Amino acid sequence: MGDPPPRRRSHERRASRGASGGRKRTVGFGGLRGQSTALDYTLSLAVASLVITGLLVAAGDFVTHQREEVVRTELGVVGEQLAGEVAAADRLVRASDTESLSLNASLPETVAGASYTVAVDDTATGEWLNLTSQDPDITVSVRLETETPLDPDTVGGGRIRVVYDPVAEHLEVRG
Amino acid sequence: MADLNPGGRARDEDGPATGRSGRGRGQIILVGAFALAVVFVALALVMNAAIYTENLATRSESAGTADAHVFERTTTKAAEEAFRYAHEVNASDHEGLRRNVTQAMEAYHNVTRTQQAAGGQLVDVAVVPTPPAGTNVTETNTVFESPGGTGDWTVASGVSGTRSFRLDVENWLGDSDDELWVVAGDADDWYLNVSYDGSQWEVGVNDSGTYTTCTTTAASDVTVDVSGGTVDGDECEALNLGDVGGTYDLKIRNGSVADGDYTTIADVEPSAVAAGVPTEEVLYAMTVELTYRTPELRYRTTIRVAPGETGG
Image (cartoon, rainbow over all chains, first blue to last red):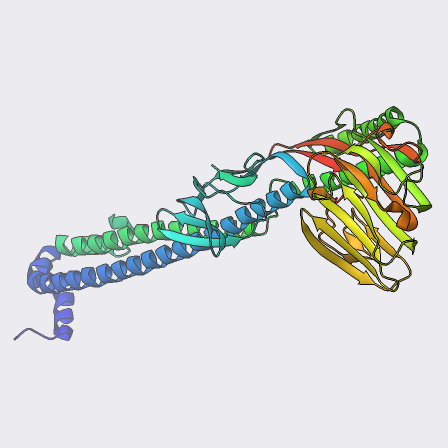
């Protein structure tokens, strides 16, 4: 603890620099500077690691949350689009004595990079389109009403066809 | 790596320990920066998906079903007009009427085919060959009895469908307990009953043994629209002659108890109508086949034109 104060050290440093050169200077302050550098190094490493890790975790969570929200929104939009196509097909079928009808609904293959399925369900509460994405696992239900019965089925997302079966007189959603 | 650290070169001169410290911090920040960059790229992709979603939400239905619906309605209207025009201007026989409506729809097809092709749609419109023959039977201001003066008589035989079937009973010639019947097939199957008790008309329907009173009215006359299912404009569900299946004979019972007008178009040849009754050859119905194709939509339907038919 009898180390000279910083002021004296710098003074001595200036003096020794003029007298004997770099080698002696290194030897003279190596131990002190080594302690300071090790502490400094460790602290800096820890703080930097903490900051970086915190940023990564926060940003990762943010991105994950945003992606889930986007998937949920896009599933809703895709569901409404498909419900619109089915309702339009229903109107066209009922306009006259339809013999055949097949329409292609151009829907995205994936929602925010996640594949999805569309399940047509006919329940007591009405007809539903249940869209489920695989990763993340999110389900969005869209209700629709058709005069023509809708055949329950499950198809993968992407290119989906809405077909009218004139024999059974019902609409089908096919993959 | 040392070059990425602003103080690296100066500290290297001070000794190896100081140099390592600078490099280490630089690497951590660099690796962290790369990782964060990847996260931000992922965020950008997610935002891109969100923007695409908003774009998708503003699109209308993609298959063009609305255009197909418009074309179907247009064709239906054109067919109805062609049917009406043929009967207005061409009061000839069945063959002449068939030729007229077929040519009219061919002309419509030739015009619309070119128009639709310009928009990328392939359409085909054609009248189903040999539209069924019909006969218009209309008498006005007549007692509802046969030309020979019989009260019970058969108006038309072998009928399977009627349209624009209307009965206007104006004067009652019988007693208050008499009933005027219009019978489809057998009286057990279906009959329309009109009676007058001296002050009020009563109209009812017996459908397979179930009698339903449509209305009672004190008006001077009563108009029964059998095809439209109304009595003096008021709806009567039991007046549905379309429920009588198969072919039947259309008869009148007790026709001598009242007079007025009656008119109907039956799907029979004039020879099937009672002799002496004024008839006119008409087409009972016309069926048009419509095909509409686009890369996204295949639609095929039949349009039936039969003005005044029940449910039409």
